Length: 448
View 1 (cartoon, rainbow, N blue to C red):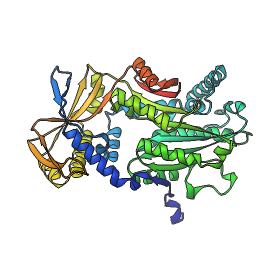
View 2: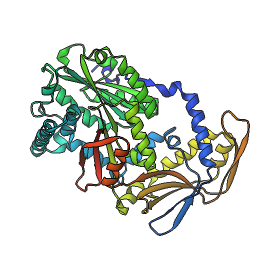
View 3: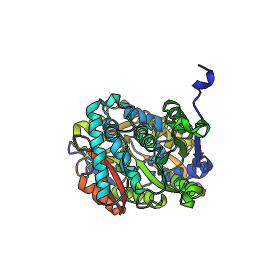
View 4: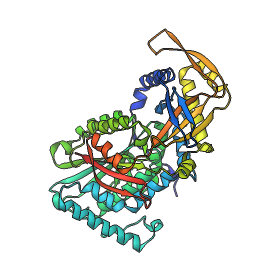
């Protein structure tokens, strides 16, 4: 084997964050200062009946700086973190049906009959072979009739929001590729592109390059097949940016595509928002963000959002997934402390990091049905920082021994609550899938 065959291909990564680094760093620094100066007292009553209060919090973005993304992925690999395993199993078990739904966002009974047919195919596949043997599917068995309603070709852009390790997306992309194989001789076939959005440029580039190298149905700009006989491929791209910056940039890119503008090709978009990220925000914030996704991405009637949400309220499972004894959560939380300290500057960095080991604290808030994580200060500390990047005025930040600083949370909604939140965001559930327990859910959302 030649040495070049072991080199991972280069993947196109649009580095918007690199262009905005100075503004991003300044904005994050100012947000940390404001969060540390908050005076409004918040509280919860934990599972033991104890009241826990706090005023300060870490911005979510600060947790993912540095090694944050890699450390969070270590959490998802841990034995107790059931969320990752449940969600990827749902995608794997229903991948053919989900792929069919993404391609056939048609109103009425025709769409329902096609989805039902896809379910029948999926059931036959599952009976025929185990999940571990399902990497290669007979293209004839996965063929659906969605092209009946198309008079022109279709291009599907799959946009993975907060892609991280893209294992879940790859399962879905493989199912889409099976449909590409099945329909490549049709007058109205389809093509697809995958856009992975994340915050760390180098990690994103390496992960996507490795995915292209390991999955023959994927290609990057420098690995595109030279001939049609190589078979259809799914183009892979990366976008290093925040959610909304990425969607705005991709919309501009799509608007410049001649095939989409000429009407030769119908362009559809599917946003993936997996990993229960929706639940990390306050309900109103989550609704506003979901609404912003739909608005910024300019979703139309046949576009969709595939969102994964965990609803488990079992204290024992939650403790295993998020508990105070988790070494992975402690490392992730300590990284957040380092990030915040370094961003605030020398004095804060010295005071916060020399104070001793901060304690990771995890609690279940039964009243609001959410799991909440904190860092507990090891001793008293105070330091002066500029009020903001544009000001010469200083303010003093004081942290008391034993004080809890809010780290993150995960709301555990029931089905009815989720449907109401989606409706508030201007979206409706067009299809859904779940695990056997019914507490890990995957929703396909479309505009109302």
